[in-house]
Length: 269
Image (cartoon, rainbow, N blue to C red; front, side):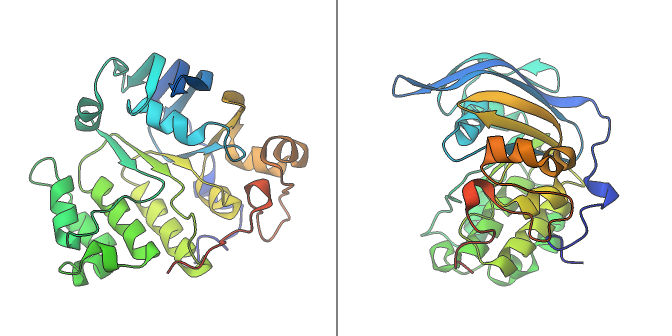
């Protein structure tokens, strides 16, 4: 079944009790001296997908970057019970934090195979899993990544993160600018990936969020303004209108998109 169009009542999308794999406490972050994240605290369960939601420009990407040390930050960040907020980015990645950036950031002048090899920390026990999940990439292994479509580049970015045995994936706007058909493929891939690793997902397409996410952390003005079940949040028209700029309800067929941006907007294939 197409994951975007599947019924919202899918039990796999419901929150399930689990220990936290990632805990953020009192996170503050700044870029060029300007504070972009303020006193943010939340936790990510050790299973499933947790959505990080909010209007454009409220600090979602900055929160992701702060977690892995790409921007200046203070506060406590624990990965599987171990403090990582004093460590450099490369050590955080080695500890098992996979990162799929907003703009894919593939190496355009390298082949697909070379992009994947560069991402492997060691001889990867998950290579077969990735090859099974991305058969099209296997067929394009000798193709330059820069010649791929936007959707194919997104698959390369996801594949790189999944090659290693990570404890969590931080995935930032994976469907941004993609055509609806490719959005569905990316959503299906995320659902399959979440069977093996928890995901903190920044996503503007609420169809995708409604289908995939168990929990939701909502930001506004760089602060956490709501935490709880993703379905319950999206079913609350007042909360979604206040914090996302769009009204959704359980009977909605299109699911909406943050700030009124049409779901699946874009033409990249």
